[in-house]
Amino acid sequence: MCLIVFAWRPDQPQPLLLAANRDEFYARPSWPLREWDDAPGLFAGRDLQAGGTWLGMSADGRFAALTNIRDPNQPAGRRSRGELPVDFLRSALTPPAYLRQVAGRAAEYAGFNLLLGDARELWYYNSQEDQPRTLPEGLYGLSNAGLDSPWPKLRRARAALENCLDAPASQRLLALLADSERPPEHLLPDTGVGPAVERLLSTVFIASANYGTRASTALILNADHSWELVERSFGPQGVPLGEVVIRR
Image (tube, one colour):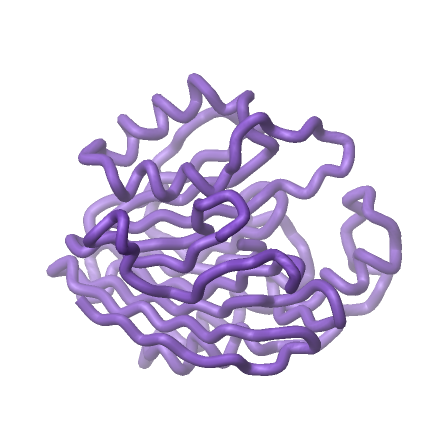
């Protein structure tokens, strides 16, 4: 998962509104959103290469999402980061208790951001900062650096999310994720991958022959822990492959 914007409003009827794009090589095999046969009550897409996920929900309204930290100089992790959301959703641990465990073994993974929560609390952990923290009410953006890093595509997506707060709906959240507007090159971050790759990765929705947005996901979590999760899948050059809707 490479871009997440979310509104955390714990006193509202819909405490969490979230829109997320998963960017990945098209050749990496994965399943679209579904309930997992080997983990009943867990709803997520699945990376078939390493077995984990980038975003998922439990039947009782627990939530987890992951993004990688982009750093070409970091060592490869001994374990797959995608197992972290799965482990949380399969556990009975509270978000802070689980993140305390994660902090003790974060060095086993390449850099990552992890969001965990439910309708009552939302927690954030960045493996480079190594300090779990609860998030106050607010509007946030997360990509492949720290929380609210001033990347142009994050600012653009977060502003679009703010415009959805008056009448939140999954289709509006998905629409903001389809933005392919490219920002001016002088505004792009330098994350060590070179200008051509920075340009490719600079849009909210990424499309090319080999790498791009594989899934766009909208989540609406209600105060009673019911939720709606909608995922659109895409192939090379951004060709639509289908849509899955799950409500609990």
